[in-house]
Structure formats: C-alpha cells, structure tokens
Image (cartoon, rainbow, N blue to C red):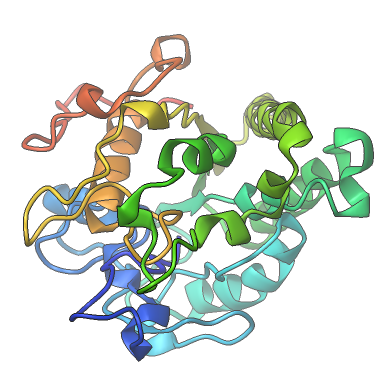
Length: 313
C-alpha cells in the first residue's frame, strides 16, 4: 500500500515528477497524514500513541526505501508475492529498533495486501501456468511464518484482492482515464498485462478467486494453532467496480481511481477502502459482505467501535 498516484495529476499536465510519487501518507492501510481517513489514523483516535504510519510523499521506489517517511510501511510498488521476503528484510528489523516500541508487550498490526500484480501477470508468469496459485500461497505462508517466529504479539491482516479486469472494463474509453494530450491511450491497459488477452478474462477471474481462497485458508491455518501471541485475519475485498463514479466529484476530491493511470486508488479511493476495511475488521467472518458497492460505504462517517468490539479473526 504505497499510495502510488493517489494524489493524481497535480497542475495542468501529467508531465511532472509528482506523477511518479508514492503518496504514502494517504495509504489506506499504512498512512498517517493528518486529516486523511486511514486505518492507522482510526486506531490513533483510540490510541494517540500509535507508532509507525508512513508520512508524506516521495518518488516511487522498488528495491529501496525512505525510512524517514516510510516508517513501518514496507510496501514496494510493483511487488509480487515472492517479494514479501524482501519487504520483511526491511520491516522486521525496523520494528525491533523502532523508538518507543515495547517489543515484548505492545501489540502490532501488520496489514498485508499482495496479489494484484501476481494476478495481472498470471497469464505470462510460468509460476501461474494453468492458473495455479500454489506458489503464491507458499510465498505468503513463508512470510507469515517468518513474522510469527520473529515478532511477538502480532495481528496480521491479510487483505483480499478484487478482479482488476473489471477496472479495465469499467474505464474503457473514458476521457478521465486518458491523461495524455492528443491521444486516447489508456494507461491501465498497460499496467495489467493479462487484460490485453481478451480470451483470458475468465482465467484472470479464476486466479483472483484462488488467491483469495488461499488467503482465507492461511488465516484458518494459523488461527487453528491457538497462538496467544499471533493471529491472522482475512479481510475480503469483493469490490463491485461497476458501481463506482468515474468523474471528478469536485475540484478538491477525485473519484475512486487516480486520473494518472485509472488503476491505482485516488486519495478518495484510499479513504473509501480504509472505511470499508476498518468496518469489516469488527464483523464476524460470516457477516462480512460478499459484494461491496460504492454506496455501501458512507464517506461522511466512520464506524466507531464500542467497548465490546474486538477485531474478529
């Protein structure tokens, strides 16, 4: 959750260095910029001493990091499941040395969102031959076991993915999604390789479904251990993209998708995702929605947990 492209085109043209910024402070699962609805900021409403949210903006990164801004947000743009190990190489030592953390007694929430790039490349990557997602599962499983063995008192939130093929279909021929002047080039078709294959739509949907099944299965596997110091939550993300507005809502608030690439969420999209994920974290597993429409989430309100509420694993 790097927040890439979240703030959209800044100024009159896409041709700006700001276009390739990660806006980490507005990341729905890891950001901590003031005035933005994110999961860390909602936790901060109840615990103002929360540590580790990412702040501000910086140029896109793939293998590097900016600890002074990233803090405990170890996400990498363009990462595959196999890159989780690299992200943990940054995150685990950072947690252990982070000022103010009582490693043995403080609870840590680690949000994991991985699989969008895997699904988008599944038609060309050998590891997904035949739409097989066993290796994906093994990478996530290995990451969970590494966290469990390294850090006490952790809740890992595995966030499910949606079918990005639906984004491409929803945004086809939309001027909002054609940021380059004098051309109708639609950037998002080049960010998800498998959408170039018209006959692969069902294959892409199958991979997305399998990835979510694997994430759900891993949460069940680790929770069956009854480890008092480690738990895994699965937060499904069954987003119905056909219900989302595409036109800019005002001069200050953009639609759900960034107008840079119509693929990554805008700031408003991150805030919508934060509200949806946060609310779902308190719902029993069998009450979490099968479909999420835009109007299902009230953008003027946030779910306020009661004293009896607990995160549901």
